[in-house]
Picture: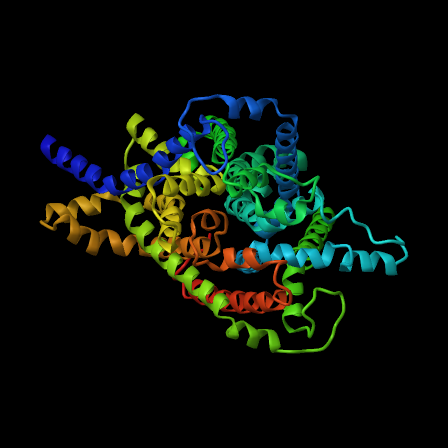
Length: 287
Length: 265
């Protein structure tokens, strides 16, 4: 009996070797090389294998990096909070309506994702840009006289585009968690004299907690590394860490780029660990 | 009480319709309109209907090539990551304990960090080992993310599978391959198909990882990025292609969902 279990275990182990090796060779080894290069002196076009902490000292003391880092967090946090505020009522509404109709509307919410976000960014430009529709509308309504430039290029534009990019990814997890609550539960709570606020706090909120986790992994963390959106529409006030990293990489200053990347990696891992502490390991793969 | 309920529902439905129509679909409408508007510039003005941009799209070799490359990479990535990711999905769902938690963390870390880190570490890795960047290197780096992606998509469905059925099959003399082919595969096929569709779509659309790992041959998102704002009169052509992509993929998605082959949620 015991040998049978062992055979099974060995078989399980062997079948997992390809995935373990793949992730090791193409993820962990590259990360180690990245880390090693981040400790070499900041040179252009070459990597000089001498140990130094110069890049990290730079990362922590350069006020410019500080500003960009704070900016990155500010933009991503504002976008995440706005996404939850905008997305939750929609998911709640869809989850409580007729199941088939709700699923159909959800399908229409997913469709825009099929257009690459870089192209959608350009469409936003026509709407929010200096000679865009919004300004035209506001001028023709007599609200403003000269076109507003606050939307483009600024951090506001980055937030708007991020919200548009991620809204379906916020509505779907909320919907999945909310659709499981049957109307009877709400009715029972109501019959027992619970107030609306009580129902929301004790029934709805605990059930959408897993959705918050999904949203952090699906939306917040990828956004922290975003570089195309701030590059295209961010201007000065919308600059993010990703833009800075890319600037060093395209200038082939690998050491500084690697140090900044590793810094970003550590931040996101801390964020992930906090999430795993709160929600448990299972939260990583159960939705 | 009933009246109050109705008011909330009215407000929510109005809000939902407004957000979908005037926020989510606004840029999509712009893309549709400018794909047939007879002007190469994004100006807020209607200059008449034209199909010129659709024709122009087919004449551009680099554009067609980039779409072809994207499809090629997406197929490769989907196939390889599905094959590699099935065993870890089973392992994660079927075992308990410390080793499993370590394994889970090991597999999932690429999934919970920004794509730019996968892109940059791959970029440095290929440079370090002297491997020339190409479609292959981009695909290899996509798979780093798509393995855990497939695991997260498959694992929740595997919970519902009874391992005793597989044990019975083995007890009756089937070998592991036969058991997989006749017992496991039919049960996980719908989940696999959903995972494959999502992985394909993700890989086809990924910009950041491809941006750092491609050689001279570009994929569709990277080609768009390389040309945006640099080549005049190209935007309506890109809009036209977007219209084709969204139309074709929506219809395809609708059919597979309708036939019950793929469950989106």
